[in-house]
Image (cartoon, rainbow over all chains, first blue to last red; front, top):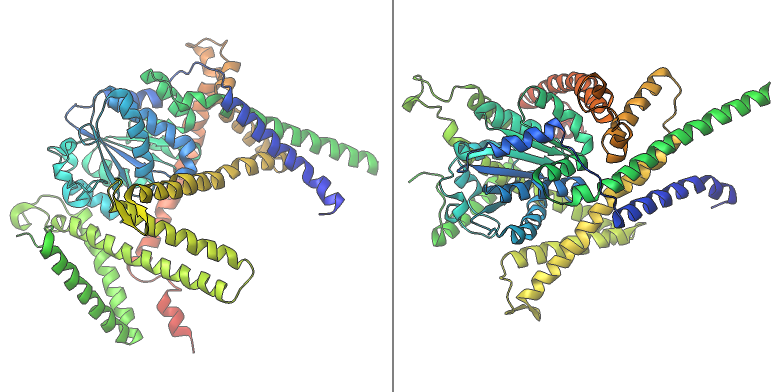
Amino acid sequence: MSVAAGRSERPRYVIYALLWLIVIVTLIWPIPSPMKASPPVRSLHNAIEALPRNKLVILSVSWDVGTRGENGPQTAALVQHLFKSGRRFAIFGWAYPTGPMLAEGIAQSLSRKYGKRYGTDWVNWGFKAGGIPTLQALAKDIPRTIVEDIRHTTITDVPAMAGVRDWHEIGMVIDITGSATLDAWVAFWQGVYGVPLGYACTGVMGPEAFPYLDAGQIKGVLNALVGAAEYEAMVGIGGQGQQRMTSQSAAHVLIIALIILGNVLMVRDRRRKAGDRG
Amino acid sequence: MHPFAPVHGRELWIYIAAATAGWIALFALLHRLPLRHKRALTIALTFIAGLFYTLEFYLPAKSHWFPWWKNPLSDLIVPMGNAMNVIFGFTLALGLINLAMIHGRNIARKRPGWFNSAAFFAAMISMIVFGLWQTYTPDTNRPAALGLSCAQVHRVYDVLFNGLLQPLGATVFSILAFYMATAAFRAFRIRAAEAALMMASAFIVMLGQVPVGRALTNWLPAHGFYSQFRLERFMGWILNTWSMAGVRAVGFGLAVGGLSMALRIWLSLERGSFFEMRESKP
């Protein structure tokens, strides 16, 4: 690399170092900040609270390690709420094969805190390929579509699945995702059978959810990490959502500062060039 | 007995053997067909599959027109879903074969970066072997094979999945944050009124998402007229009013485009298919 090229690359490396530093520092020393639940978060919480106890909740975990930073704390907050309120749930993946394994790790580690047991309080259906036809089949016959759980137990022998045959026994589906999977649940579950839907998504997916929320097709939304933090505050639990808010705050402020700085430098250069011409 | 009921034990192995033999015979037969017959068969199967799902979705669930008063296609949804899984299985194998051919050629010809192809084979083979091995091995201290105990097989898989795959995936995605930060500095320039509007909206949404931004307007009352100017409320107004209108417009456009694309695929009107490419070759 020439000296000139090295100089032009310098601001980029400074920005990289600055971002890395503030994220690391604020992750190690977070500043606790009070969170107040926004209406979409409150609405999802209230919808879960209103569910009949005998119904099963499906946690559709359509995420992998790439979006774990946001979807992980959302899954943890929802699992804790379900454990706390004594509701059975099923972990299910149909978009990312690793999703159910990652969510299982979260459920396993939280189960000790709440004294819950796999098979009785939750079940993991694992990943099912096939996309939308699998969702359609699932609504009509859960035991024949899932067949066995991730531990190779026949699904009808799992206590948490007692009496669960089809969509009638499902209280709610919560789609936790970093991809465009909501449309399929709306079209083939909520639209056809009226099964209530909840949504937890990454920040970039959030705006796409609001038309569905406005139309009443989804009960509530956890949007990005802030959604997880607000949900943790609402349920009254500590979690990674709230711990990471300082880090996210610092990163957002840095990006805003960089945009302003970039524009200030652009204006300065323009004035200098205008002065040279004049 | 239901024709699609699950079977177990010896019966299951007979089913697997029969299905494998049947598929091999079918593939051999399809392979011998002339191109125009292959094309006609593909078009017919695509149309029938599309017709099945369309009719199942649009016909009422219950009607006195149907035998036994219910939609007869609904009972076939589960077996069709399972059949789709089998087809996905074939596509997975096809993808693996394709990747193995491309990367195998890279290694054989020692093309630049051939060591990346070697890394691909090492990663793929180790993940398949240990992934399947640990699935069918109990997590005990009993010996498994190759001098490894069952517990060691599980540990190796843990290292591959939790120690390598997860951090690598997270690293690739987190690099985006660094690109975004430099792009914010280098590319986000206010050169027009629209850009200024976009930047103001971006600032409000970004600050409204985090506690430090919300703290800026915490002094405003929580209720009443002035509460509308709190950053989180302002952010909500942008997302729920202005952004939602745009998202709806894009959504309608996508839906109409998706419908026309689905029709083209269903009716095999889409150009540039495999058969057209083959037929156009001299």
